[in-house]
Length: 225
Length: 315
Image (tube, rainbow over all chains, first blue to last red; front, side, top):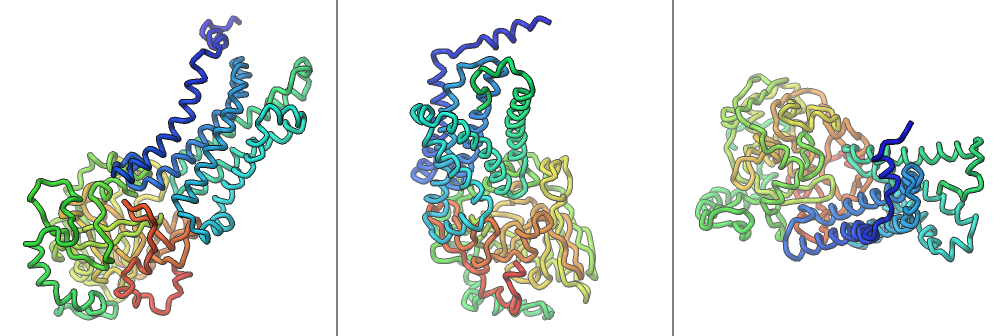
């Protein structure tokens, strides 16, 4: 059956010249806007972040982390489904974005929310399960961020691939962290849990298909990262 | 207050309001009519025509650095899940809510049950303006100039029957008018409860207004509970029913997460919420956190209600 013309047009879409610019704007603007909002709210008495800017900014940074994580995990399925192999080089950008947003979210909590209260931080990192879970995700991302350079990929070879499978644990921890942090309004955590399930489920389905006899592609580099 | 029958659950007013304040009330009320924003330059907090200044009310339990939270924050940072779960949802989603006509049912273990139109209901007491501290279980706080009547007056009019020990409050259930009730985030209608002595306490208000105006819809129009020594969620909004009972009523947040929200929910800096500390709070509008006070600063007035109770267990 012939594919419709629009589908071919989608598949033939190639990285336009402005892609990198849009990508960087999409990464930097939300984070900078949160900081600008905080400064404006406290220095100029605006309510960009609402009445409780420290709490709202913290939540916005957490939610942004989840959104960039979706983007990072969507790269490989999109490459496969749409044939957009040119997306591959953005995967590291998204991955590092997730790490830096998660780090900013954590530092915001420590510096602005609990304001360097050592006792509270100690309790947070030991007794508050949702914080332990979220912090674990951040710690797991640290070695991934440190080995994200081309040199590391070349040096670690096969071990790099194995190490970076840790990526798939991060959305699970992220979703649990968010889920546990809400009072009763589980709507958004639920939506993102479904999205993560689809993104991870696709990988499992794809990996199984590859190992069960689709030998034609076996000479290709590992398709699912 | 002198002609009120003294019941076992009734405290002498000298235990409740510091005597100096109590004695001053009349003087103060007289002054309030004349004085301007008597508490703090509070007129700057509320947008209103120049010159139309007014006192915000009598301060109860305020610390020297407590200033009324601006109107804009009081009326746009709200937990009112009947109109959405985000803090800024209620202001938007409740804007078409019609809080009148309104009927309040008073029933259960009372000698004089009744259904009251709002105006008749409010005749039970004297409408007063009072400034209270407000502490949310989420570790933020405000200072709010309420307007309302004492719940005790409503209960006295209904004449509690001998076995009555608790008061149960119910919010309107009407998903057409309260769209948040179409989502099952909590069990609707929202319900709250107090022990009868807590309900009779002179600090316990049924509020009809803030900043001298009728309650905005997002703040629980037309009638809400205010119990300043308890976490804010005890202050049930848009009340349609007040029922006296001999059993501890089930309450919305306690039903939803019993390990996190107790029946009493007294403000207590030494008992943490499982997910965060209650030792400090962020006052809306301030950058640095402040220490949370036992019973939210009302310990002198209410601590005796809980004498001998383990507040760690009865959180």
